[in-house]
Every structure is written in structure tokens, then in C-alpha cells.
Length: 303
Image 1: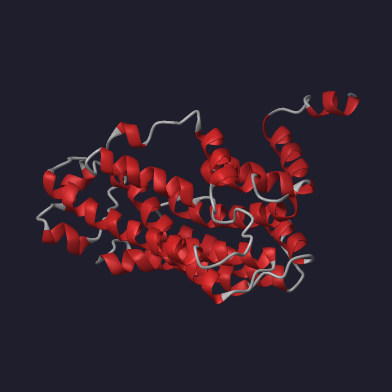
Image 2 (image 1 turned 120 degrees about the horizontal axis):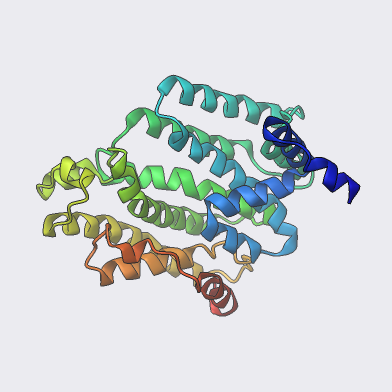
């Protein structure tokens, strides 16, 4: 108790330094909290993994959160470039047994002592984010699809490696689910990006249906934009169905690694019910029953 009282005597920067020191000594707790605050749905799904798999899963997802946040934390190309370079150098140092003294690198380094995780999957996650930062818009649906796979599927590949699963057919499931989840993530984030005058809707589809990019920025829903969203959502649904069909042909215990697919299905179903209105508040309000729904899916779903 005396130690606790001593800690709370600090104010301002002194308290922040003290708190940071505590976090550095508990990198696993830091990673868990980072995912909880920034990726809540995947946080819930990760909690339902087998206990031996949770540690590497939270480290993997914490890395993904860190690099995903770079785009939200600054609009300055030079600063974002420095941060991407930091993580690029950090990956090298982690795999050279010389991690920086920061929570996520330390936790990843600890995990790698027990689990063999391929560096190139982490690199794919990082490189895809950086290319997207430089390219800005998606010219077509295929580029959006590729980005979706590169920013989601490597996470599944890493979790499968941590689980010790090496199966080409299961890798194909991960590829399709990555595309489905990534496309859905972009649709969900479209209103948020639009407020920053960033359009994640493929430009060729907007042109095809005569939807001005400016109307996307203003949040103006129309029959034409609904048609665009329908085409994007349909591509996500196609990959979801392919993954389901492939899953039927494998009896491998995947330990709920693909449980996040439940959230993809829920969103696509609700989007259809709302006539593909991506701005509807019903799509973005908090669901208090979400933990129970994910638990139910774990208990009764084949995923």
C-alpha cells in the first residue's frame, strides 16, 4: 500500500513517466489494453481463444493496432514516414534479439521465444499500410480487395502458425476471410474517413454509378451510392461464402481463430437490411449484447 500511495504523489509528467515505467514492465498487459481500446471486437474474440494462444494473439493484434494508428495520428507525410521507418527498423531488431524498450516490441520478442512466427507476415502488414498512405484512394475494387487481404489475412496466417497449423487449404480459408473482413472494415470506416476527406470507396464504381466523391465526403446517401456499396459488400460476401465452403472440407480444430468472421456476417446482414446505407447510425451504435453474441458463436459455430 505504501508503494501505491507513493505512486499517486506524482503529478503531471512525473506521474506519466511512472505509469509508462509500469507499462514497460508489463508489456503483455499493455498489448491487451491497447487492443481492448482500439480493436474491441477482435479483443473479445481473442479472449475466447485457448489460453496458450492468447499471448501471441494479443501481441500480433497490438502490432497491427500500432501501425494502423499511424494514419490516424498524423496527416504529415514526413512524420508518418518516420513512424513507419521506426516500425520497419523495430521488426528487424525484434528478429535480431535486440528489441526496443517499448511494450509491443518487448512482448513480440518474448512471444517469439516460444512461437515461431514468420517475419514476412508482419512486414506485409506494415508495407500494405505504407503503400495505402502513399496511394490515397482505391482506383478499383480489385485494389481495395488486395489491400483488404494484405491488412487482415497475415494476422490469420500468424495465428495459424502460433497454433502449429500448416495446411494449404486452411491458408485459402484465411485468404478469403481476410478479404471479406478487410472489405467490410473499409465499408464500416467509410463515414469516419469521409469526415477527413478520404474516400475508401473504389473510384471506378463511383464513376460507373455517377456518384461524386464530394457527396461521399458530405455523407449524402443516394440510390446510386447504395448501388456502389452493394457491389462492394457483395464482393465481401462472395469471399465469405467461399471460406465457408472450404471450411466444410476440413476437420482441423481451428480453436476459434476465425471467430471474427461472426462480426463480418452481422455487419453485412444489417447493411442489407438498411438498404446499404453506410451512414445509418444503426450500423455504428454500440451493441451491449456483443460479448454474449460472440460467445454464443464460439459455442455453436463451426468456426
